[in-house]
Image 1 (cartoon, rainbow, N blue to C red):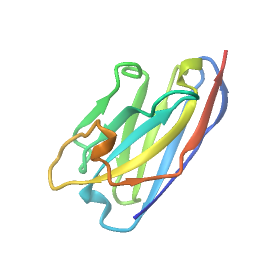
Image 2: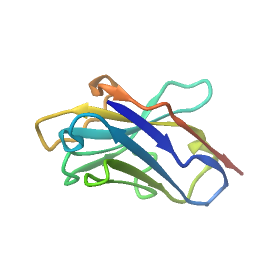
Image 3: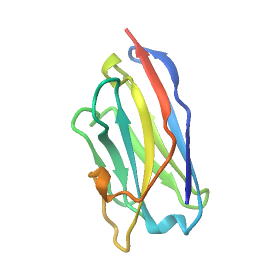
Image 4: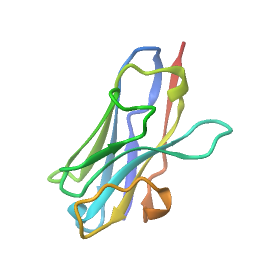
Length: 125
């Protein structure tokens, strides 16, 4: 399994950005997909996740109402739409895949089996 995150960049406060994560390997629809981020000097934290069929999503409180996770199983891709960005959203964003037989959302990074390389998002004030 390989994951490739893209779409990061430098934006201003209040801007929007869409991250993408391409997937190759085992059947994509058997994985819960998650987004995590790691800010400089901080631990990696959960951002959002989407169940294998896309029917369930979950978000960290800090991004609820601003971020939206989606997936396209036909394209083997998961997305993170980020709106109303704030400087505190600055971080390296990682996509991750967790093999599952259930339509569930997973929020703990230890539950994830595969990780992408990360894409940097910088929000200036």
